[in-house]
Image 1 (cartoon, helix red, strand yellow):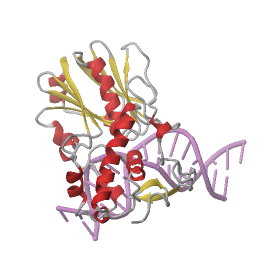
Image 2 (tube, protein in one colour; image 1 turned 60 degrees about the vertical axis):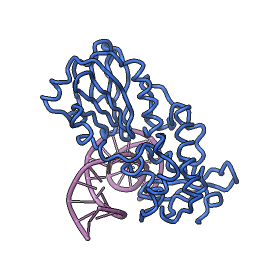
Image 3 (spheres, chains in turn green, orange, purple; image 1 turned 135 degrees about the vertical axis):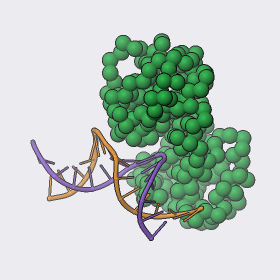
Length: 275
DNA sequence: CGTCGCTCCTGGATGC
DNA sequence: TGCATCCAGGAGCGAC
């Protein structure tokens, strides 16, 4: 599923094709996929694309003037850059028409959303307002990370998945970062030592940067594709995610699968000790 | 207020 | 072989 590295890859793709294009209309074939008001829709029409950014797992397309288009892909969403004349895509839920191309929002599981709004309202409307720190920003230091987690009464994995604490990490990179830092995902966040906070902070940044360099993770049966419909490559570099019953690359012990924070979780009982 | 569990969805996997 | 049930999983929301 698209997490920070996948969304960053898509945003880069969109930046090179959509900047300067003019947004014309949106057509929703799945009504719940698009959230807007007639007023907002009217205000968005025929405005040039000024910038495209990522915030957490959100894609934010800012139009000249006052329009903002926000997309969240959730589990299975895709945004595909197509020609206007190209045929309908499988699971296509909405079509954003620009003057020179057509952006198709596709989503097998119908969890994803497209919002049409304006600069004053889009952060509250979409939930972007509630997001925590960006893990690849300069503000995200070992110290801010430790301060964020110190009082928390839940597992470290639940904290990594909590978008109000840190924005952009999902199930794949939570497991990968915990393995990289040699920390068991079901440890209580407050129980980590200063050194472990530091190690985990570095592991998070390393894993996210490496995945961005590989254009994200596309599982064999997974749904993530970039804006051209192509797979990423980080699945070849995963150490634990979806590798249960396979040997740990470090110690050869078979990795085990458990449930932490309600999510399928894979870790190595030897490399990721209880304390 | 913080944390937990339920819900939304689909299609592939599993069970009988 | 075929039909029914189970399950993953991000995030909002109600319950406690």
